[in-house]
Length: 121
Image 1 (cartoon, helix red, strand yellow):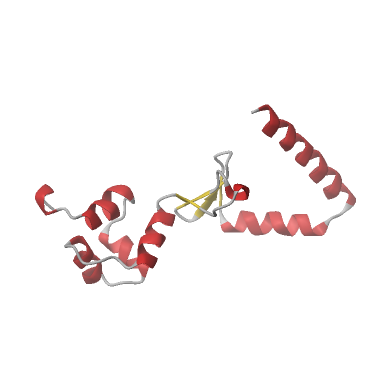
Image 2 (cartoon, helix red, strand yellow):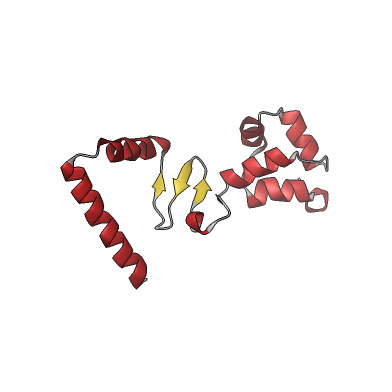
């Protein structure tokens, strides 16, 4: 596409989000033709814009509890920079639900350590 033919939609989709036409269509459950029409200036549905923003790393949540968290492609990025896949999150939740004495002691130690680190940063 030539520079003078680039629309804001094309710039947003391709340069800000780094999405190809095919990947955008797949992500938004739209046809390639519909995405190409967006590139020509047709309005992008708000839900598709939101999906694209989430895909290309957008912040999640409004409150302080979510500060530093973001979605990057299909992973949850923590404030520490670590990216978690869905299976890792499910495993962590399962381990927390076990609540044996050893896990409770380990969790307490980890929380104390995390608080100390957070207060020193």
